[in-house]
Length: 181
Image (cartoon, rainbow, N blue to C red; front, top):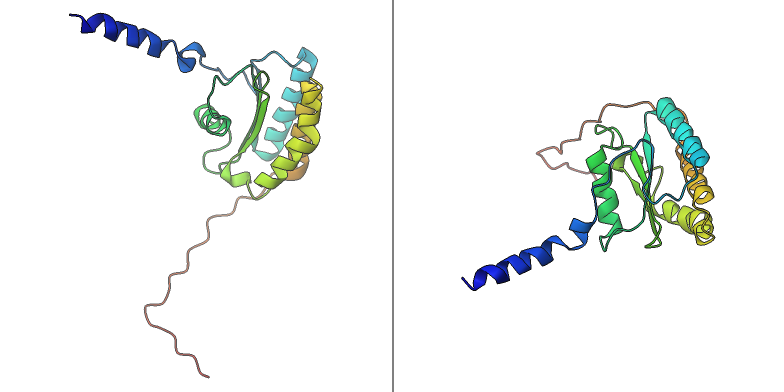
């Protein structure tokens, strides 16, 4: 009987942790401004730009702002967010998530495998450090995000890419080849 109050106290502590305190984030379209750092006209402009890019290319990009991750890893959170929301076409894995966490002062560009040849990690890092983060330091989230979105669209392009069927894998010959000297 003395274990029951202890068990209830442990359950109360466990359920009041960071994961329980953070509400589930709902997709609000191409721009989800949960941190409320983007003026309405900038949200509308980004939405138009992202919708036009998706219509032209089929690729999907979303912008998400949050006040805090409550101690969660930004890389894992961005990946899970993109997967849970279904950003990009599953068959091509061509989604991009720009996550800005205002209070934590963190930002990440998550890129689906299908777009990694066009948006390698090193290029995304240069975009963050050269164009986006300096604007965020001045608390100008709108122009930092706009610069990032425009650079990504410029790098990937605005033309629908042809989709090629996967190439067959070459099967090695069961016999060793003989080479003449």
